[in-house]
Image (cartoon, rainbow, N blue to C red; front, top):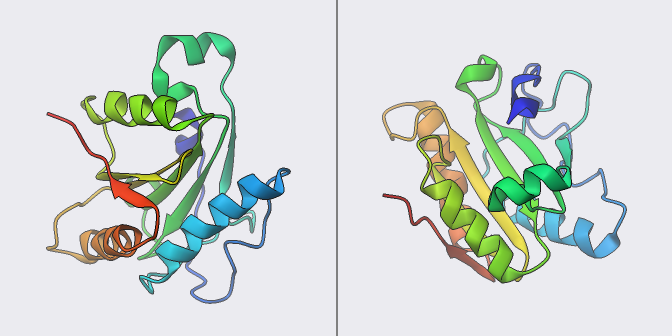
Length: 170
């Protein structure tokens, strides 16, 4: 997504920021995002605040034309969080992308479609009835700190109540 390209990251503020502090306008939606972020936080991997001090990039619903072209653009709202190790370049970061869909069928179709693409998340989790939590890592191996951090977040999300791993790519 083009939004990812505009991320400007600063040094990591491990423990200095609470990524659940910013809220969505809908309390039920905000609670869903917060639940996923809290579960990922159990990994003890630091969250990386953005250069503007925000803790995530908000992703409003795409225009109807985009939503009609691909199921993964049918989300109602989304967020991109950066997680450690912090301070790496924007093309070498780890991200937790969370999307809320209108229902499980739409969400699962979106996960299946994006998992079949050449550029796809390292892992996807269907959470509850409407959320998709995706881990995007520039190094999904366990050879370096980037991959180990992504694996720790993966493990934490896998232990979350109501989450199921849903990667169905080739």
